[in-house]
Length: 341
Image (cartoon, rainbow, N blue to C red; front, side):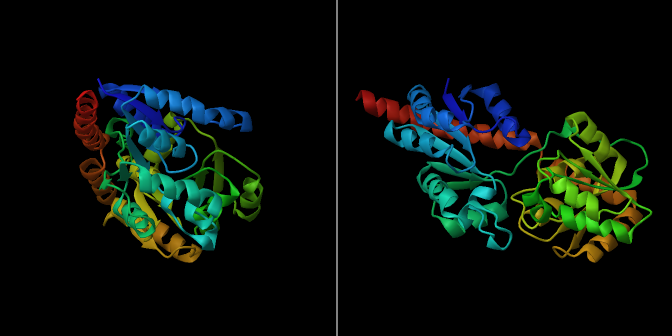
């Protein structure tokens, strides 16, 4: 059985989903990503040991954590696959976002993107950003997936509720459009707005200071509670400056939410004609779109769910990921035979 060394933060839901997919089909090992300076010093040697015992390296995001894996994979003749998930191929200096906006992050990202045997893009927009930055050895598109059974519609009438999901920190206020969402609430005082996400830094103090009374801040919620919010809300808002895919948009649509999003990067790929589009940073237009979505027929929410089921199921991603690794297995076996001859 092919042995895979998995490099990624398993605390991140969509990364953990890929890990669980691969574990079903292959022998998968993983090393906890370093956090302290001491752990970073030891990290390359730990990676080296894992690589020697593996056939394939599978990493999420091109950066300092995947650079040693790609380096040692090349040295020891192993195959390396890296998912370019968003930040690692982005150049958005206007909001100081993306690995290509600063040299410290650009150096490892560029190395990984150019030297990995295969780069997987998670959307056409994400793929376009990649190919504008580097020429990878090989690149394919495999859309992110959402587990259909974990995000069912409620079967009840939706509430007069608009929600957005994201960690509350200063860097997300503009990137995720959270500030715009909160400001738009003043134009719809009879609508319940909820910002769902962990308070990561003191950005919550700023948001509470500008928020009208109809905005609720939940703080961290469990996966089960998040699904309940999706099921209750008629409208899901993601007025981001950038999205490499838009996992929470897809999750909410599965639960029958009508999306209100910006027409930027991957968001139109996910939403299609099942939602409403607004200019980035325009709180009045966002409020108007939320109002329209609240009055839209429930059939639009059902249409949104069907779109995600058809295009972005986890089953589809599993099939394509496993097929990709199986293809690499052929190369692994050929390399082993060549070494013996």
